[in-house]
Image (cartoon, rainbow, N blue to C red; front, side, top):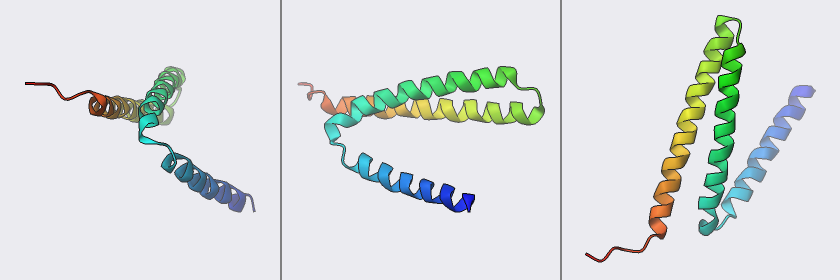
Length: 94
């Protein structure tokens, strides 16, 4: 019964997340991405702290995987934010 409740919450979260993100105007995406990048930076620091406190090989492997994934996510977010900011710049006159 607990599994059904967890799956129900997950499915509802997916639907609510999709609806919220799809309703955001394009002018607000860049500030939201910047905020998300800050959150991913905190997640990266947390993964590094967990890796420092790991005691078994499994814990260390999972925390290194978390560090790699958080880094890729954060760098990708900065790349996307940079590309979105390029769209708002005026065309250069050459």
